Length: 228
Picture 1: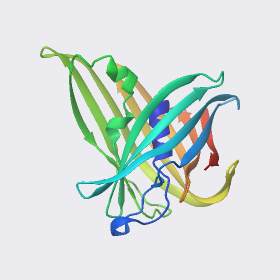
Picture 2: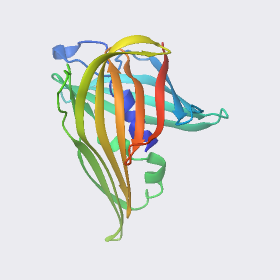
Picture 3: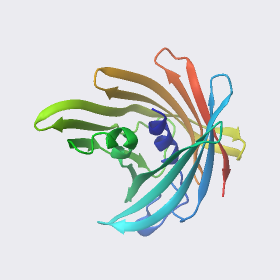
Picture 4: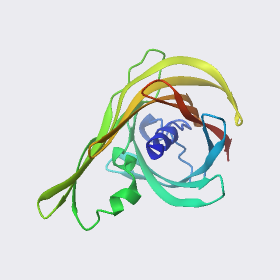
């Protein structure tokens, strides 16, 4: 679930227009780094993540941005690095929803057959209060010699821009778009539903993210510490 929230945090960086006046929601300068701190509901630091832009290129008429993410826990131990992929097509920014699946978990099935179906998340260049955003999902069906072993699915739905408001985090004070969305993750017979609220800022991204369980209780939150 944390990887899903991380992707949704990374997705909202924006530095302005490039080819065909397309505005992205992530930096497009290779080497840009954003540091985000994660806390539990008791304000205890649980991990720190560094996001770095690794490559930017045009693929099939779309701007493709590859991001490398490293997470370090409160004890200073790295959980390794992973890559996320994003696209910009016209005035719509897309998240490759296949990146939402835990790659370590999927690695356990590398000797099996995996069939993906998905609908990328889409974010318009300019979001306004009251705007409803498109749903997105990814589903992976794992099979071995024709027998289905497991189905994994992640849905991002009911996304809405609730307000445009000011917010202060360690990185500064910004005017932000406040977005509320539902995240449903299914692995086999296990289903987890969460609510995510993000404050998105052009030029930086999701400067704050709050996560709640299905009963509406705060589970944890993240804040942007620095952009460099």
